[in-house]
Image (tube, rainbow, N blue to C red):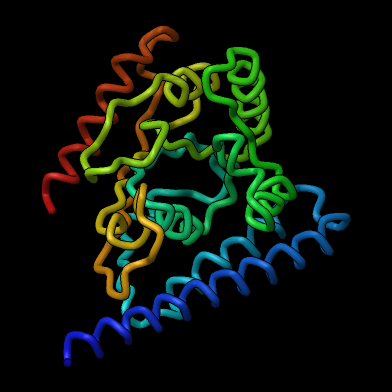
Amino acid sequence: MIRKIQQSLRSALAVLIWAFIALDTLIVFLLIASLKPFDRNGELGYRIANFWGKSIIRINPLWHITFSGLNHIKKKTAYVLVANHASLADIVCLYCLGKHFKWVAKSSLFKIPVFGWTMSLLGYIPLKRGKHGSIRDSFREAQACLEKGVSILIFPEGTRSRTGDLGEFKNGAFKLALLTQKPIVPIVIQGTGAVLSKGKARPAASVEGSLKVLPPIDTGRYKDDDYDLLKTEVRDLMSRELARS
């Protein structure tokens, strides 16, 4: 009997969480859409999106996400930000960095009603997997953003991990960092897989997670074609951090 009551409460809480996220996302979309003509550099839109991420985490007293190392990210420096990826909740957490950045994300996400529309309004960069022309265009767009002083955020694994283990990294983020000579900032997220992982349709009622920003890596000490060495260094740093948990 007690177990059934607990399950009912968790289901009710999950419904409330989804309802709040949906309403919050809709409000953010409407705000960004209405202010778009006045937001030439995208900073205002990002501030609203940043509020969206923080509000989703703070509204739920059962979600305990700790943040550390945020001081490694400087306001007036453009970075290539790379993070591991186990859950859609990672996206919410990354909006709490307090840094204006553009996502490089798979093009299918841009087709999601409201959420995808908001991504388009914010000028995020779509990527069609397996299409070389799209990859080339996305790379050039990301390069242009970095050269204008806007950071780029990429999940180097390319997709969410089903197990939580760190997958193999693709080369794009590291080639981009070397080409633009921008520092790479590794970001390690833990515990979010319980919220909304790949193949999971419902957020967990209680989550203990963390986001840690590691010190920037100076890409100036690498040669232009040393992206494989840079990729290995970044992955090793993130893997060791994940192993500490």
